[in-house]
Amino acid sequence: MSETPSLPSLYLPHGGGPCFFMEWTRGPADTWDNTKTWLENLLADEAIKPKAILIVSAHWESEVIRVTSASNPPLVYDYYGFPPHTYELTWPAPGDPALAAKIVSLLGDTGIPCELEDERGFDHGVFVPMKVINPDADIPTVVLSLRSDLDAGFHLDVGAALAGLRDEGVLIIGSGNSYHNFEGFGGRGLEDSQVFTRWLGETLSLEADQRREKLANWFDAPKARECHPREEHLLPLMVAAGASGEAGHEIFSDEVMGILAAGYRFGT
Picture 1 (spheres, helix red, strand yellow):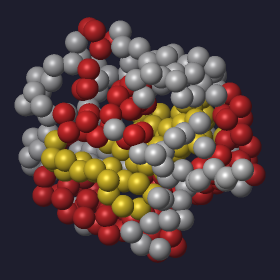
Picture 2 (tube, one colour):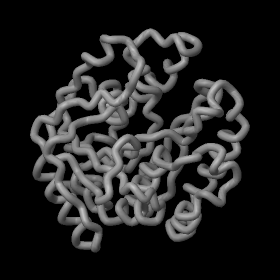
Picture 3 (tube, one colour):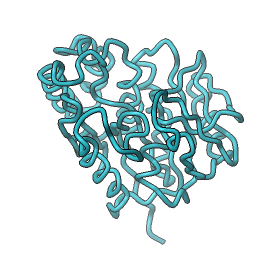
């Protein structure tokens, strides 16, 4: 019997609200076309055939790390001011209570408290991109929260504690955005996003120890705070990076809403 190859871990830009499922009127109509096409083909790679998916969402913070444990999680329509039909979107992927329990155990073994959450469902940082990535909604999915102190080093450690899941067919995805500053959208933040994205690419390609040190101190990077006044959309990247000792590399980039957004992959 051949061994199951270790899955990569990923970091993806999840768009703006329910952007992939509406007529976009806040800019050119084709604003999100490139991102959508990339997401549609993400699982076409033969190296990515997950038995389950663990997503770290930029849109869920808690004092203690929590993980969804419901068998049939609901959707959380946590966006505002969009067309009525976007509040009727469905994505009925099953949860995975056994995987959620294992995550609690793995984190606990390294001294990181984690609690099960049996009521919360999939927020838009999860179901919006996943409805594009896996429209059949047939892969069990659980969601991990960020710890509300937003400490980068801690979230790198969370990823490291969960790295072994990749050997068991679990695809670890960080869902956020490499640039998240509303004041910069529309072109004002383009140069800042280019500078910070270049730093990210260089940093993620380093050996694991060097990479960890730089990511833990990401706020010292050029244009860091201009791109992330608050880092919740960057921290899912820390979990994805921490879950792999292999180099990361850019697998997607696009100028969207006047800034540069990028996605990354760790592992082959």
